[in-house]
Length: 245
Ligand SMILES: Nc1ncnc2c1ncn2[C@@H]1O[C@H](COP(=O)(O)OP(=O)(O)OP(=O)(O)O)[C@@H](O)[C@H]1O
Ligand SMILES: [Mg+2]
Image (cartoon, rainbow, N blue to C red; front, top):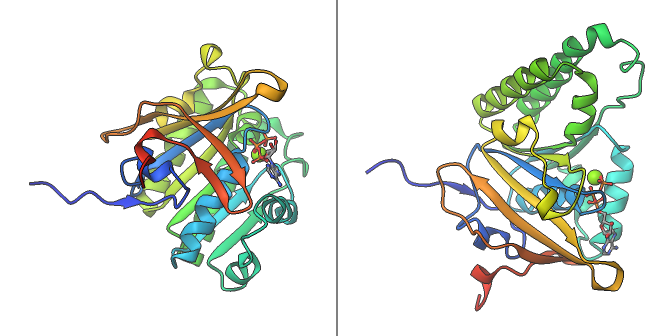
């Protein structure tokens, strides 16, 4: 009965167990979190792990210089010694778009500009035969489109296009508060197939980072919030599903 379930493994320690296999293939997933939660790094590791398995991916940054993304990843993940190799082989592509480059001044053309950016990204996905993508982050896209209805429509078409391209995507998104009880949902949280949230709770020395899968449409997933740590070997999500593995 039905088609066999197909998952794209994130390759991130503990996370695939929480996802009961991985991200459903061709799903569009939001990764939300407060500042410094590790959104960029987790999204990077997803592409890195998949590139190592021979599945090409493209990381689009709207916020930082691609060089900085690579530098930060190498600094956090000291034992990922084949990043340059994967980039040279074209399995890991890090591209950027400087959003300050005159775009923000032309608000009249903003939604047109949004469309152009997305079309450009789609072209690159096709050209590189990428099956995984990361967009980091939605904030720059949000800045382009002031009208909430137009923003929602644009997000709808982004999701539809990426799905049509057959790419499995993580879009990072900022949360105003890293606190679970103050979680405020944005339009993209409803539009995307899946949503994961990274929280920071507690204070200073007692600070705890934890990850929750809020939704993964049509699929079973963990409902437990799991602490995580960033190590030189990558993220380590201490999920209950992973105990004993
Ligand atoms: N070498 C390292 N070892 C351990 N943790 C690190 C290391 N480098 C960075 N980090 C952690 O990663 C966090 C930054 O990760 P990342 O840039 O992915 O966060 P982010 O959620 O994308 O932040 P922003 O909202 O600013 O974009 C830092 O706040 C720090 O806690
Ligand atoms: Mg970031």
